[in-house]
Length: 560
Image 1 (spheres, rainbow, N blue to C red):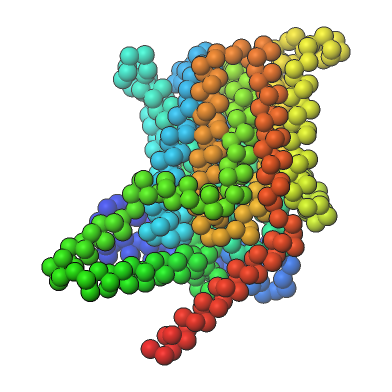
Image 2 (cartoon, rainbow, N blue to C red; image 1 turned 180 degrees about the vertical axis):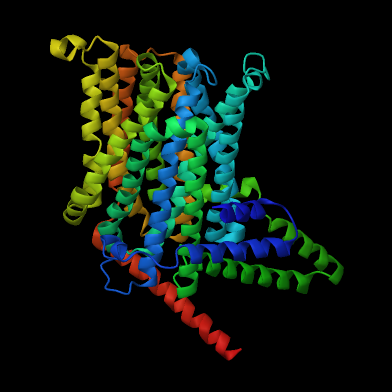
C-alpha cells in the first residue's frame, strides 16, 4: 500500500517530462504485477465469457475492468455513508438545518460535474481513454484523501472546526460541504468510463448475456461495503471511511489500467477508432496547409501554420459545439439524456424526503450512518438477486425496448401509494408516526434505486453498444455526468425555492408528476432502441469497416 501511495504522489507531483514517463511506466508495471493472474474460480464464472481455460485476453480485460468498477462502488459506499452523516452532523455539519442546506448542496453538484466533464473531455481528446481514466481516478483518490484528512483535523481540534470563515459558516461546514458535493459528482465520472471500455469489447449478444453479471459484481461489493459501515465507523470514525474509499479507488486504478494494457497489447484497444479519426483529421489539415502554401507566400505560410497550431487547441466553446452536433447526429443520445434527467429528478425528490425524515427519527450521527449503510445494503442485495438470477433470463427472452416500457410501472405504483391519505391504510400500519412515515419513504426510494441498479443501468449499457466511439465515450459521459447531475441539481434547486414540506401532499404530488414524466421519456426512448438482430448487424458493420481500414494501413506501411 505504501508503494502504491508513493507512486500516486509521484504522478501528481509536477516535474519534467522524463519523470512523468517514469511514473507512467511504473504504474503499468505495478498494475501488471498486482493482478498478473486472475483466480481460477473467477474465470469459471459467467464473466469469463464462457471460454475454456486459458481465458482469452478479452475475457481477462473484461474481468479486470468489472473488478475495477466493483472496487469503485465498494469505496463509494464508504464515501456516501460518511458524507451523509457528516453533512447532517450537529458538531461538524449543518445539524437541524441540514434539510434546508441539502437541496442547495445538490444544486452545486451540477456545476462541479460540468467542470469534471470538461476536464475529462480534454483528457480524452488529447491523451486517449486510458490516460483519461487514469488521471480522473487519481484526482478522485486525492480529493477523498484530502477530505478525510481535513475532517479528521476538524474532529481533533474543535477550535479549528468552529472558526468562522464566512458570515454564518464554520470551517468544518465548508469542508463537509465541499466533500459532500464532490462525492455526489465523481461516481458517474468513473463508472461511465468503466462501462465504456466493457461496452466496446462486448458484442451486443455478449452484452445482453453478461452485463447483468458485471453489474451484479458491483452490487455485491456495494452490499458488502454498506453492511460493514456500521462496524467500521466505530473503529475508524467518519473520516476513516473516506480514507477507505481512497484506498479502494487505488485498487480500481490498478485494475482498470491493467485492462487497458491488455487491450493495447492484443489489438482490441477501444481508442483505435479515435486514432483513425485523428489520422484522417491530420491528413485533411495537411492537405489544407498544402493548398494554402501553394497560394500564399512563404512568410504568410508560416503565420498560417501558427494559426493552425493555435486552433488545434480545443476550447470550451468547441467542446460544447462538438457535443451538440454529436447529439444531433445520434438521436438515441438525446432520448437517453432526457430519460436520465427525469429519473434523477425523481430520485432527488425521494432522497430529499429520506434525508430530512431520517434526521428527525435517528438523531445520532453514527447510528444514522449505520442506518444509511444498511439501507443501501438492502438496495444492493435486491439488485444482486435481480442481476444474477432474473435479468439473464429476462434479457434473453425480452427485447430491451419492451423492458424500457415496463420499467417505470412499479415506481409509479409507489408514487400513487404515497399520494393516498393515511386513513386509507390499516391502523396497524400507524402511518401517522414518524418512523412509519420514514419507512414509507424508504420503501419508495428502495424501489426506485433497486430498479435503477438492477435494470435501468443494464438497459442503458445495451443501448450504447451499437453506437460509435464518440457516442460510447463522449456522449455517454455527457449523459452520465451532466444529465444525471443536472437532474439532481435542477430538482434540488426547485425544492429549495418552493420550500415543500416533506410530510405534506406537495412532495407526494410532485413525486407522482415526475414519475409520469419519467414514464413518458422511457416510452420515447424505447422507440429508438434497435432490436437484438439490428444491434448485432450494426456492430458487425462497424467491425468490418475497422478491419478494412487496418488492412489498408498495413499495406501502405509495407509499400513504404
